Length: 195
Image 1 (cartoon, rainbow, N blue to C red):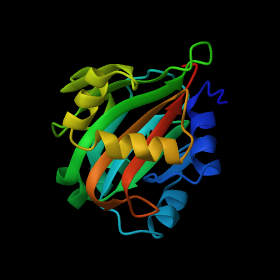
Image 2: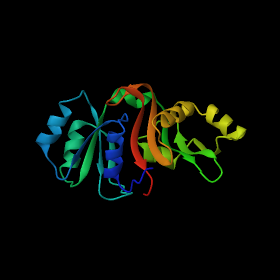
Image 3: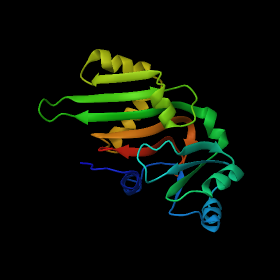
């Protein structure tokens, strides 16, 4: 059972569960040396910066170069730097959020998903402009058919089941190539239950 109320708890759970993710550095204030030391661990050329305190904050910038990221981050406190490769950008198959849920009262096993297969700057953009929205019981033929018709969704469902990500909203992207710190096709960005 998950009880995730903020981005820090989400990050701790992602690490505890050993889920694939993009490399992150969390900082309480701008520290150029710490950023450069972190970046030396990987071959990254694109960056996103996100406020880690303000839930729902619009203070996120994605797809920045190193120089843009450093200039933007210099003004911030309590933020994260996410690192990835530009070559991954056009390899996205599906992006958004999915929740598999189990209702103990009637044994129903269902899915709620808001996803996009259009290229987008980040997961929030995919959720705000979805191309696929599935909400229903996995015991229902119509829901199962819709899930199978959504490219990559059944791979995501299998990934969530394999990692026991049930009754938690998972923000993720599915790629046609291996990405992230574990070189897998699915990257988890955030886990949510109560925010």
